[in-house]
Length: 398
Image (cartoon, rainbow, N blue to C red; front, side, top):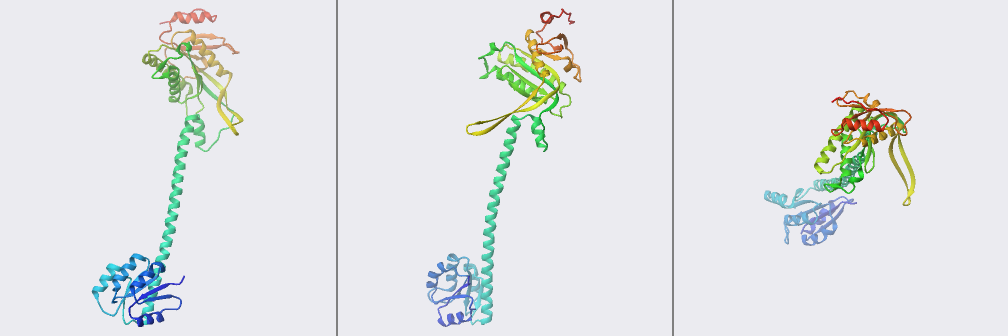
């Protein structure tokens, strides 16, 4: 694109001399009237605009001041045959002129000065284009950065949501960049509870929620507080285990602490709600349980769906449920423990009672059960349970 130079002067001779002096590679337009020039400039987008100062219809400073408004990108210069310091100050202040050219001019000096103005315009335009490109790029980067931040925020929310659904040892493993292979075996301290005579609680609520829900909440909280995982639940019972998270140093102690805390929670809940209920609680140490991911692939709603659930299984796990059922024959919330579990306790606790050796349904070998009796369980209740299971009476020291 050729540089467009405009020169305004009321003397035709000056216009002719100026046009002849300029290089052929530039486009030169001259006007003898500033008013006519102003009509054209708005559609011309000139690179450089020069104006004589003393003209009958409008002086050069006033003309260039208007040019600054309608074509602000144009480089402006004032031309005068008079030496006026005040003019220089006024033109700089009002029209923001780039140069002040004296008449009569030296042709080489004139061309040199105009060439500097052309270069200045070209540089300014290049800078503006780059600035515009940079601004656009910055806007694109800002948009991309916002999208990344939103994606990270969604990822954090999704991770928190997944952590609420997935067992802690699963999320901990994946966060460290490793993976788990299933099925696998693990030694677990397993624990369960079941509400005794739960049918009597149906329809009973506390704080606008079923009492069953409060019991399950308390059980889950106690399990989580001590590093366990509640694997499954029904309306009246739930099953949990300790030991899959490797950072849990003594799973049996953690399970016992959770069971003890759960029993305190049950007592407080019964007192606060005014609803009488009790739960059977059982804990067992189950070696080499099979831990697996149960996966179902099917098609529904026109798409392939994969459903996964976390499962631990062992005949030893079934044992803890059999142990818990025995506790239904005793008053209060009693904690039943297998000998295998008690032997794993690092600290032996007071108040434990050897209930006896029982042959439980579905189990090959008999099992010795130790209980942490409730406040309501007396010697009579213990002996009645023993007799009903073919065991002799025993004397319990007070």
